[in-house]
Length: 100
Image (cartoon, rainbow, N blue to C red; front, side, top):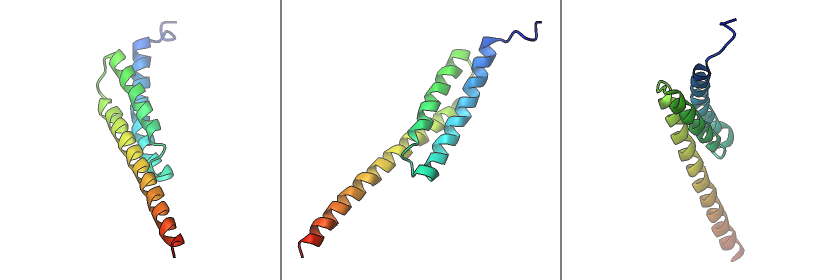
């Protein structure tokens, strides 16, 4: 009977570890799958992982969570900059094309 009772702190710690690894994996995989436009999902997972790890008092997978957050934000920012640059380039090309 005692084995069936789970410790909520251990469950929270394990969920935090799992989310930390998932945040890094999602941030990196979204770079290749969606060219970084959906990498912010990894950042969200990383923030959730940090809150769960802080609540449980564990710091073992904190680096995974921080890496997922940073990579997610940087990839999303770079993809937005690339989309804006593409739109500006396309608009400049179209306006110079129609002048001839």
